[in-house]
Length: 148
Image (tube, rainbow, N blue to C red):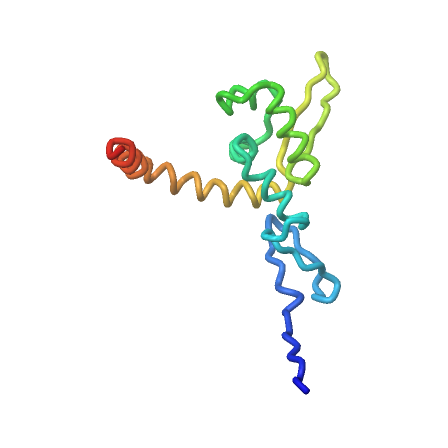
């Protein structure tokens, strides 16, 4: 009779601190999050954050509070509809807050949460890297399109 081999899987891993937000201190109280798993909440949030407009919105909000139209001007090319949908998704994921300011005329302002600020900080580092190497990217694209 063949013995069954049971593979041990590490169920819990340390949860990093992002923008001051941490999970519970005891690993047994944490759920396993895996961005590669289809049904994982972290994957859905990752998809929202890395969408075309969300990354730019997070970068802009990393500069400070914005009203809707000022944000739309800052993120060139985004339509009202796409900006509205992006803001709703980021608010649902806990990346930003929406505050209605009671004034005449009433206005709405958006600001990053601590989690959103942590994500924006990491996106800023990526954007800085890409901006610093824009010349290399342009040359590589020219080489690839010229070779065809």
